[in-house]
Every structure is written in structure tokens, then in C-alpha cells.
Image (tube, rainbow, N blue to C red; front, side, top):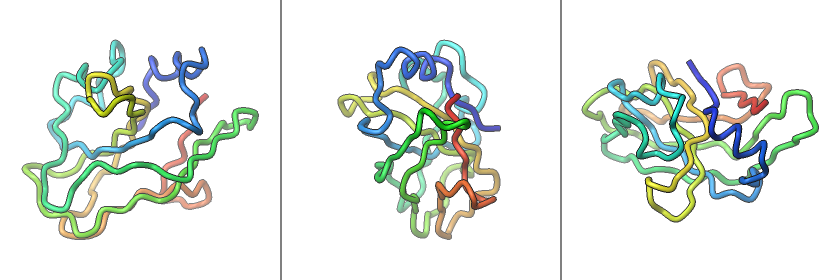
Length: 145
């Protein structure tokens, strides 16, 4: 199950975050993560009970590039360049999904979680892609309204 976090919605509604100029990052979380279920009261990355960030070889957090957003469109879709992890090694547990967040100062204590995207059955030992093509049935379509 994918979702946009309520506090992030509030922040963009109050123009506290400029979606197109923000420093967007993404991290993978594993099956023991509470990220897929915790929504209320999550203001920073450290607010999750258990982040359970992926720990397999070849993994690093990624920076999103090519951000575009049309606040006047009916769906308010966020778009970015595709993200790829090449030949991820096995982690302690399988990947459950990806958490997109806004980096403020390089610390998790101030990073703002934006949305979670479920990646059931993400392959380990292979490339993992997140594609931002609304026409691609296998990629996320991130609706922010």
C-alpha cells in the first residue's frame, strides 16, 4: 500500500516546501519497517518506530533529479528522473518499499518524509528501478492531492 504522509500534505499546503526546488531523496525499507503503516505523527524520519532501512550490498540512498510538478493539474502528479539500484545484494530482509523524503540538512532528525511507495517482490541480486512515467503501468504515479 502506498501513501502520502499527512504532515507532508500540510507542509505543501502551507507552502513550507517548494516541491520542485526541494532536495528530494529516496531510501529503501525492509519487511520489518513500520513505514508502510505509520502515518499520523510522522514529521521527521526519526519519528518512525522502526525504519528498517535496507542493508544489502550495493545500496545507498538516492537523490531525485529532474523534479517537475504541476499544482494546477487535476491529479497534481510529481515526476522525476527514474531511479536505479544496480545489482542489489541480499539484505537482512527483503525490500518492502521506498520512502521518499525531503532532505533538510543531511540528518534524519530533520528530514521530512513525503510518501511511501510499496515495492512488493523487489528483486534482490538484480537491478531495482523506480520509474516516474505515469503512462508506465509498472511505475509509481504519485498524486499529491
